[in-house]
Image (cartoon, rainbow, N blue to C red; front, side, top):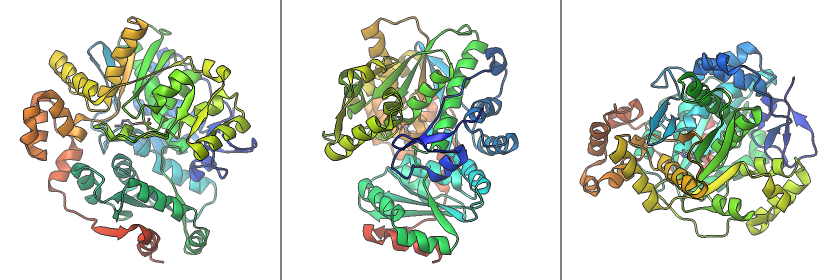
Length: 496
Ligand SMILES: *Cc1c(COP(=O)(O)O)cnc(C)c1O
């Protein structure tokens, strides 16, 4: 049965999956949601015998119903190949009383790779299916992780170009090195003289510039976006929750049908929403445990029903979770509002006007699948240190937030029986300095690359290719610009 997509703020008009992927955001500013969540109607016995790629097809084909089998299987084969350093793609590691679902084995060693390695292929197929002849130009502003994962996903994908803007002094030295050494004839990286908000605002301005869009169209280009509200990023993330469950069954850790908890270190609410979709499909999930850092807007929301972004923005050692507006939450709001776009529009209008909204009692009741809590900087560091001390396993500063919050969940609810999967969203090598500092403060005097060698030694793991490569890789991108020059730079890159 066909699944169509409609906007969380629309009047009920629908588009196909490929159209939703091409558009990214709906024209009315809403997010595309499926008009029904398909059922996972494959026996667990069969799923447990599948490779990651086979399971990816089972899950994605149920959402992307206008893709042919061949199209989708091609996208999957191109995405989940030897860019990943393990055939399992998303392996599970049992440590400290939970199962860590390692989502960091891709090209940029963070979980964004799980979706950004397939999005470029979904997008070019979508363009073809809809008769789009233009070259797709991806514009992204990044505070570090997304930019590199998008560059790596789109590099040398025919029919696409990618331009990434990052704040010149606003990313870590390793993150900057990762971006400016990016290979690929269709990739462009620009350091802007400003902060992340300036970069983001600049990109939005370019997107909304109708004059520029016309010029582009004449030259055979059109803009698109790779950010995490694209349904083409959300659906691929459902796959690994099914995969984790099937593997737990296969390995005899749980019985078929046994409910598990899932704990997710959360920022923009995309990853945990994918777990919620997996549950809606019929995967036996008990609680969705939403782990936050000090920017604990979501924790407050789950406790009080009030979403309030009016607060100080705190920078932490888990930068990918430092967010005050979790864009993907809108999809959940729409759902608990009984799929009522008017109610959702009203709440989102209140968010953009006053930075705040409150949901009804009835809507709060529908949130019972979720549990929210947060971990401080100190608790996060303690979780890394305790895990290493107890088991020798080293987790990163995002995964550690989930680990700490899972402990709080057990203490508060006394649910000690339900087996729990923790989404492990980044390799410790991506945040080596903070990770080592949590284990022993004396590491701080080592240089970045000496720290990496030390991490390899104490964790007894190989240094990921992504890190090895940038030790010696030549710098290929040196463009910088002022914020008001961004549109000019885009035109220059495109030769118009
Ligand atoms: C993006 C990111 C997150 C947050 O994921 P959301 O889907 O935005 O909630 C957590 N950890 C890491 C390492 C990330 O890169």
